[in-house]
Length: 204
Image 1 (tube, rainbow, N blue to C red):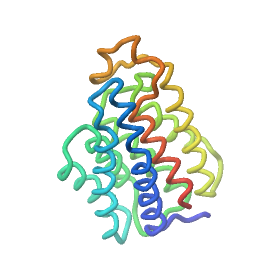
Image 2 (image 1 turned 30 degrees about the horizontal axis):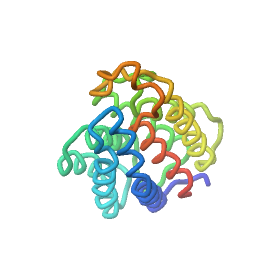
Image 3 (image 1 turned 90 degrees about the vertical axis):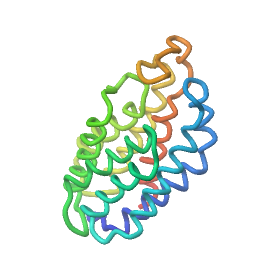
Image 4 (image 1 turned 60 degrees about the horizontal axis):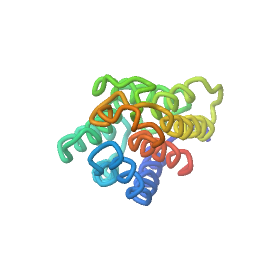
């Protein structure tokens, strides 16, 4: 497919919410190892607010902007701040009612830039950045005008990135207090964000 419409994007978001909801307990259990065990609930709440806002959207820029602002206003906590930053960043880089491959790449690159405004976490710190950064990099580097191919590359890199967090020591947030004990478990945020990217690709 060489164009992504607003309807396609809504489908991607709905699928992400469905997949995240299905795995919410798993994300909370991972979070309970190193955090307060509420990540599954938090990301379901945040994605629900995002999908609700998106349903009213008719073109990309305003829709993404509203999604980002509303989730930050309605839901407190770091999960909604990061997701809000992601969609606000996307909104800075898109125009119109359908996107070609170049515009889709620019939108996701903008999303990453938006998240970077909200967190200092780098790749290798055992956070959702370990899924997000490889996903966006993979999408940028693939030479294809087929949007599904681009999203599949992003999904594969995100899943690989989340898997790689198992061998990392946490350097961020509450999890960093666990030091070596944080090794052996995937990061809950990297897992949920990789689930989102995977769902985006599968929705198309």
